[in-house]
Image (cartoon, rainbow, N blue to C red; front, top):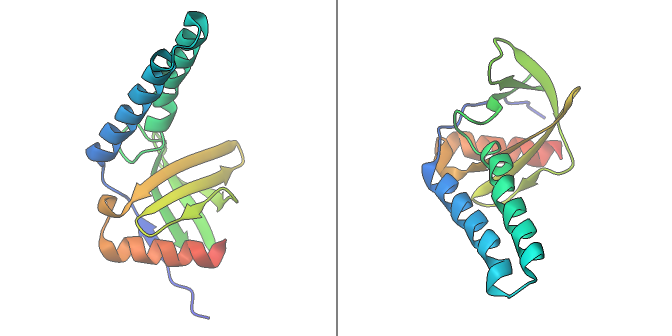
Length: 138
């Protein structure tokens, strides 16, 4: 089998960030709409809004910890924000590949990193190559 390299550095997708914000706002409003007890509704709303920062950290852009991903010579490497060199990573079991969406779960020696990629964040050929490589790896 021929191994093919994959190099991606996706561009920011503001529509995906706006959709995530809308989803978190709806999740924050639902406890109030269902008439939960006020203290429970307040806790759930704060939790939904606070988790938006974690979601934003997984979307391509300047707030994301992962800036680029490379597969070369049988190994995955990720370029992290505020880092000058590539770090070795492994594709974890939580990775999911769909037709227009990739939920990437990366394991490092320090913990886990997540990345949510859509077809619009990169070139069509890059997205196709990444999907094929992930399906072979998982």
